[in-house]
Image (cartoon, rainbow, N blue to C red; front, side, top):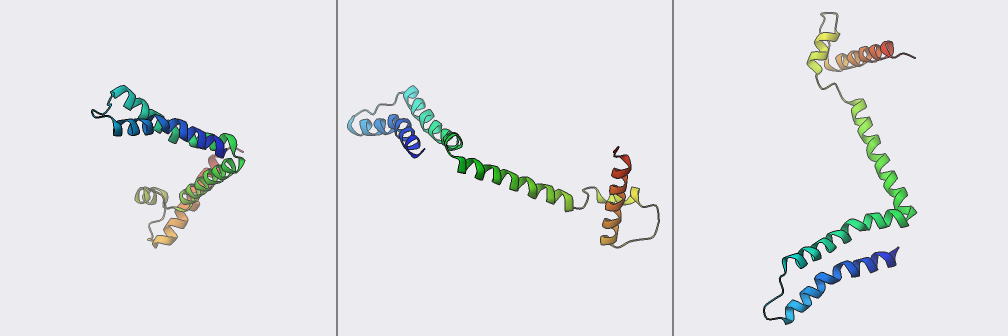
Length: 125
């Protein structure tokens, strides 16, 4: 894998580095727009192809990438699971049958319990 990455790096950076060396010796520098665009595309291709090479040739990279993706999904699920509802005041007004005031924590707990009961009653098992 290292050899492939190094060879591709050398090949894809060679047009630009050659242009820099040649332009240091020429009095009017060579500035063909299409060749400069080609050099830029080679450099960008080198950067874009590295993750693909790592994925194709390294099982360690694949495992670490999968682990990274799973870890971020779990954090998002936990964040959603433990957050208070976004439209809290609307849910509070529509879900409470009693008119007695509750403190914030009891209100959130009761709201979650009622939402869970609604989900369980509407879930066909």
